[in-house]
Image (tube, rainbow, N blue to C red):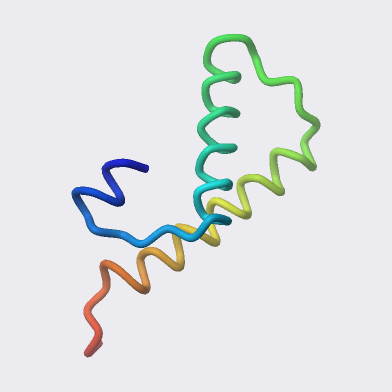
Length: 66
């Protein structure tokens, strides 16, 4: 998140920060310990992350005059 805020100058809402922190925690747990969440929980978290990514691309990266 630091890179998004400080380098890319992306504004993150509290909800966006929560989603990214949660996704990072899941990623670390999966890599180091094997993730123990059920499939629906993982799908929900992935959906939230994709919603953030879509908003971020639209608001921060894509040209306004397209």
